[in-house]
Length: 380
Image (cartoon, rainbow, N blue to C red; front, side, top):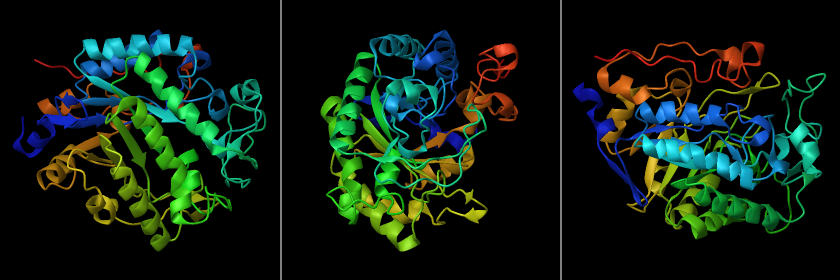
């Protein structure tokens, strides 16, 4: 093993578990759970990546309710059948000496009322306020419609309870912990962002009020999992038409991180700035997330992972410098089931991603194509 990546392979205590290395597999939406239920395809997919050496696997975004669904065949965790399907996944991951958190997800205003699961839910598309996101394209619906104006959620406490029940279900399914999806313009971000949250009650207006929803969700999750709760944030915004002016962004996320840090979490994941256009205009707010927020994590037991565009060498260097505790890789895990082993043994991460089948079954309806058919490297 090269000395310039050694820091990635030091153990890391994370809540009540000890990871064998500091390489996280980030949540990756793949849409292979038939009718929201994890099947043997998912078991094989996560088994491959556990065998490939992931220190911590974070599941793809897992929906807390049918009402919060954006895409077809995204997995849920609100039913007994889903819990049973996930139990097969977690058992397989543990049998291959890895750990797995469930990323709990509600899409908020970027759902569509004509999406099959949303129609089955029999409820509106909910959001903090009745403000549509710009853009969007629901490719599986006739005419590829974009986002629509959502219904203002009457009582956010109802959704907070759904998050708590999802955590209870995740524990029954054998997950080692849960990660709150607080990034990428989904429901938690929509509450944080003043462009999508115009409420005048206790859930909107001031930084404290806009932060309330996400913090209350985290309190609910820690009531189930204790310290084994993480949260992913993307302060730069952009994706799904969120993003504030720089000073407002700094004020909001510094407050949120400060308060969340008091709850005794296992980790934060911060996604770095990614240029994002909406309707031809730059939407993301460029700034250095490590420089801006690292010092606001005070609890020595709460770890920090960095996500988006990292190389193994950069991740190891940042760990050595004490700027992060672990590296979160996403896209590499799509086309390399053995990312960690490749890094350790100096194999290239050069298998191209089959972008035609990232979010949908492959040719002739084959669910393995572009999913579980990527090869491992050859090891002596």
